[in-house]
Image (tube, rainbow, N blue to C red):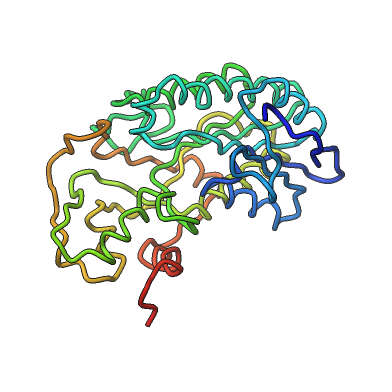
Length: 310
C-alpha cells in the first residue's frame, strides 16, 4: 500500500483535534493516550503496525499526508515517527533520511498550511557531550550520523514551519510492547536470564526519561500554545537522574553479580556523546513538565517481562 488505505476515519471533528504520526511506537502510544485522556479528539497514525487501532499512512507519500491533514484539520500534530536507532541510521542512511528528514520537512509544510501547531521530537545526540548541561541556544555538534540527521530534521521542520516546536529528549523507557523498544529495557533479559559474565556500559552518562513525562510535556505545550501563539521554537526535557547503563541494570533489582562495568568509550557502533545532559529550565519556567523516579517506574515497565513475580 502507498499512502492511505481506501477507507479511513480521518475527517473533521468538533473540539480540539490532534493528529499523531508515529503512534505505534513507544513514545507515540503514550502521547496519543495522553491527548485522548484529556479531552482531545486524537487520531493516531502508523504504517506497518497501524491496524487495527490506528490509521495507516505512509509519511513518504506527500499526497496522502496532504489529504490526511486537510481532511482532519488538526489543531496540533504530535510528530513521533522516526528511525530512532543510531546504529540503523549509520548502516542505512538513505532510507533513514527519507523518513527522518524529508518526510518531516513535508509534514511541517503541510501543518503550516492549515495553521496547526507541530511538535517534533529530537534528541540530546545533537550535542557532543563535552560541555553539559546544554541549553536550547547552545551550538549543536553531533558526533554521529544519527545526531547529524536529527539536526537536519530540526532545520527542515523549523524552515518549513516557523511556528513549530522542537522538543529534544534523551533515552526513553516506559510501557514497552517488546523489550527492544527501548535502549533501557533491552538490557533486561541479559540481566534476568544470564549467569555468565556480561559487559555493561559504565562510561556514557545518561538521563533516562519516562515516556509519560514526555507525553505530559507534549500535551502541556499544545494546550499552552492554544492560549499563547508565542509558544514555539526549541525546548529541552529530561529526567534528572544521571545513570550509566551499568547502574540502570542494577536498578532492575535482579541478581547482577555477573555484570561487568566497562569504563571506556565503546569501540563498536556509532560514536556516542559521553554526557549530553539537557538544561530544562526554559520549560520549567513555563511550569511545564513532570519527572518520574527511575528506580520505581522501570520496575513497573518491566513487570510483564519478569519470570519470577514473587
